[in-house]
Length: 400
Image 1 (cartoon, rainbow, N blue to C red):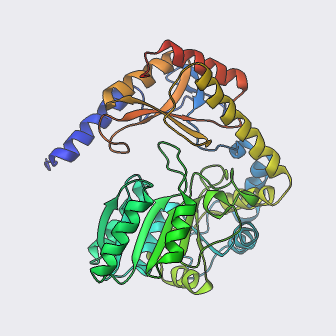
Image 2: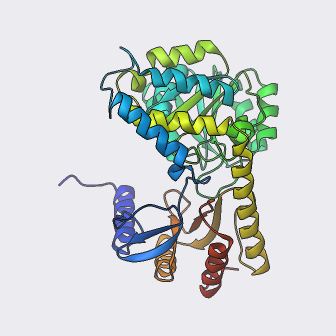
């Protein structure tokens, strides 16, 4: 038996507890997926754990895109993109160029996109500053840079005065470039990146660069669904943005958007995980193309507004019922802090017995003893569903 460090052992035991309590690593019962409800261990529950916020994963247009691509191209084109790619890739990227400012590159997953980009453009004389709550996939990719000799440290969450102080120190210490790695919308607490403060730092320091994961902002925010970071139609010349097609977009895979063609070409031709990983399959490319067409149509605005209305309704009902929501921003991810991991698991389990499923937000994704309920609002849910959730939250002994 290979022994675990104390930190890994604690994580293992906590995760096993979540599984044994039935709030993690569960399988859905076999039934047609509606988005609104799921069945877990024979219990039907309202699904407040879904990250496909616009509800596009069951959209008829996207299903038809999958069917047509499968019939024409089969289930898989099994070769590296270094040799050749499906023509669907070129079609998808043409649509993405209309959605995003900059130069998009499609990756098999967002995580593999991080692992392709960061070690290629960040050198050993650079410095990486990780936001305290940046997504684990970004942290993992940063370790590849650390193995190449790049200094990596953590900075306070969304605190840009503190970040500027660190930037000044790193410049004085002789750093070549300083890279700030953060999220557009943070995946546990649902708070928005302070874009204005970040832009000010980018404009002030020529050695300052940023790489942002806007997986949870893409599609439901911004013009053409370009997200929180790029939704205004602009990209800073020292900014790179990654998004996920696995959330609101209703497909699969990742996209990295570069401010210039040169960086995009370097990663496209030399990114290790693009060269040596399987490509996105034709059925999923068909889904992505269909979704991109929706994003370039007037229909998207209606979908986005319907979701915003539900988010605002949830927040207003929490306010009226004195339910303390920690999330300050109107995003699909709403967080209620409750305490340590075991307390979080018990509350999630209790909600499941009452017919509501929410996801756990606990250590190590959150600081120890500051975990909570992660409530995802989607278009699938009705206002009556939200009312029912509020009733069940009122029945729990939540912190005030």
